[in-house]
Length: 402
Ligand SMILES: [Zn+2]
Image 1 (cartoon, helix red, strand yellow):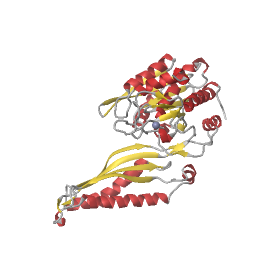
Image 2 (cartoon, protein in one colour):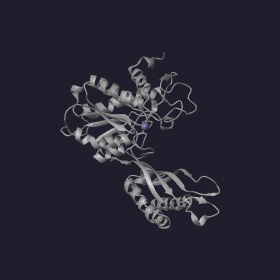
Image 3 (cartoon, helix red, strand yellow):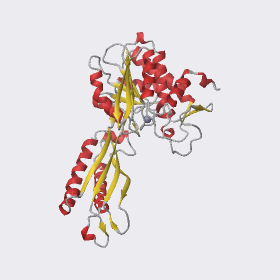
């Protein structure tokens, strides 16, 4: 047994890893564990449940400290990406393992070690000394375009009706301790084309769904080219390599055989949305163009034909001020500048709808997330806890000001 395996951080991480919180499954047990732990630490806790596609999911919101307006939210997601059928695992993904240098298990990097650090920070915190409120938020379905936080922001104002909701948040996604004040958003949806099938020797009797999808693909490429021409200076700084929003053609299925007119075609598209662009209106405008330029001409030939967007999920982009006191404090404590956007989306995009500005900084390297044998350096576990305690102390107990 290594010395790290005798720490509370190991024990809490071990318990969190053992909950199978793959996004498609229920996270209720994990949510009750988190809420129970924080209850015992003296936090006021709420477990907010939702039923998603028949599965019970829960967010946990917990707070401590005075009822003042300048508090801090610390947030992480409870769900993990799937491991069943992922080749390359050399140990049980739900059993925390250590080789003395690293911890192994699904979710150690993304992002259960951070959740464990949150719990231990709460346990060690002298609540009576809090000058500013500390609010913990644990979400579900972050890995599904942040749908859990999308639901949560609809009820948070009600929950914080009588006490002020903090306007800044720290989200501990694996950033290798870089501090990101911004990230692009993410959206995913299907485009479905229903044509009219038939024998390929009688092309005049059919309406080819793949050919019509071809028009839509052309359209998406035009929109991408147009977005390249309208890049804001701030996005050029935040995302120097890929500053523009862009649609990606992800998966396509259509047709049955070489000698048949394809009756249906389905294209799965994703969209990376730069701050300042609005995913909902981008997708809505695309839907209008598909209706006008593809669906209506198809229906004019055969009334049953159609082309439309289905099953759209959106995680909005994040853009927090780099000069705000909390951002400056983070940058100072962590010792890194604050001038780049993260290459991934977080729950912070939804939080921003409530005027909460998030900063992304956490232990673990992004490249380790979602991999078989997901692992995190033990150094990051130890250092991350120290830094989180330092951040919470500086903001909530010392009352850090610019
Ligand atoms: Zn994550």
